[in-house]
Length: 619
Image 1 (cartoon, one colour):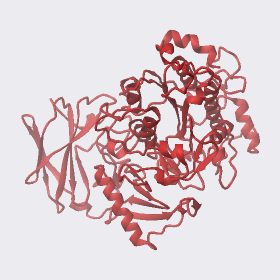
Image 2 (cartoon, one colour; image 1 turned 180 degrees about the vertical axis):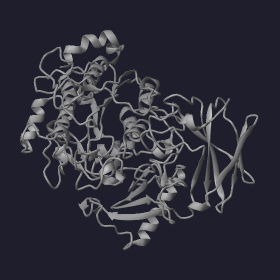
Image 3 (cartoon, helix red, strand yellow; image 1 turned 45 degrees about the vertical axis):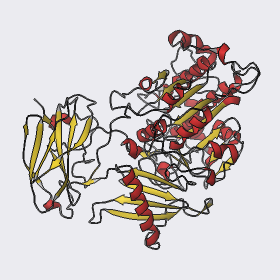
Image 4 (cartoon, helix red, strand yellow; image 1 turned 30 degrees about the vertical axis):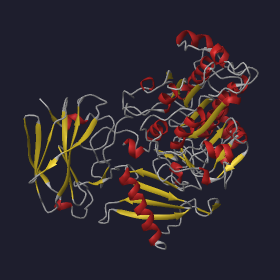
């Protein structure tokens, strides 16, 4: 497949190569291995056949299953976050989403309630991965690597997606939607075998995918040098559809459903969505094409050997499976609870398979690992030095993979310098949770509208790290083990404090009556003295403990980005010097009961909104 399109690639992109200087005349393995990171989108832990537990899954993933036999398959692997964008930013930077100030999908706007009258308000977060962050691509570039990206990006600002991959260390980048480009009607207009069809079906009946093609073309053009490919498929994210009618019919038949159904809304519980099943098998096929290229292509730096022999492959997902969208059931992460957009196991546990030079084959591991670990691991594999003063929150897995992938003591926690036995997530958005796993136990802190502000859930997932106890998170032990819950919550708070985490606020305009709601302060007046802006407020019984100015330098356009700056509090008044270039701003006051008073009121979270329309304009 890849041979058909190489000419157009060379004409369009012409990445220079230095084959002669990289060839190893003594036939030793080149010291700089290649790295292929395959990041799928919303692929759940139970969507991949080799991860099947309990009820058999109808999905077929033969290529991924084979990959698991060729390397290490991790049963307790996690994404950095339960949603896409923060996970991707963490993987690329090697930093925790909280440290990056990016805990959800889209940010960069004033703190807003999710809906009119919501009881909680999500805190501010950055709208994009900051350009000051040194990505894994930038580190590898400095070590002579060719770096490529194909497919989804989604770590940049809304609308523009900036900074773009080429601004963050990638020599090559293509943003295609692949065969997952939205269909007008998923019940008709399927791909054909006609070569002029942009999604023509290959000999195995799968539609052409430019994301996969771009990735293969990059590897082929870069193979004379060490290369890093960050392959980001759009599958299996919504919309739920397939361009292969034969594949769709296959799963109708396998699921025992008459084709076509009278209703095209899939509302049956479990893994019974034929469209989604076809999507899972399709991403498996594309994974197989990438691996086939590596296995069938001779390494010009190592004559007589194939590229796969000196290539590390990481296969994983950006978060857990999306179980439902609008009225449609997509998949089922059971026995894990919940799914994408939730910090319980179904939202953060993901498939992870790693293969490569000197990594044992056909090994299953229960060591706890995370996508944040990829960055330091790749640095070790490639002999790339960490940047001076660079902070990496992940653990280097290279020793684990080289010596004994089942020995958790070989994973050193950069937080403590000792063997890692804990992992933390912070999701003050949507599901409003922070979670901490220590060994066999997992604590879930739920942010609420009660006087206590939080509730705690405690679950025992395993016994001795591998014996399954309650991965369903169905038995809350917080009341039975209050001291353990308290101790874990204190450690969770310590971690969050170290990262300067932000938390949900109470909404003073909540439709539901809340404790101390009437005591929230109200804005009395505001104004400016030169470059200094101020807001005065009336104390209605609750003291103001914090004030921030939320400002933007590009207000009034779609994609505007907002930032916070602290204000000085004195005598029922808050003031600050406007940052240079400010076009619009909003005052935020927080009282002792955690109510957020925003002036002017920006409304609620809606991605299409231009927030400056309700802000104060700098004239």
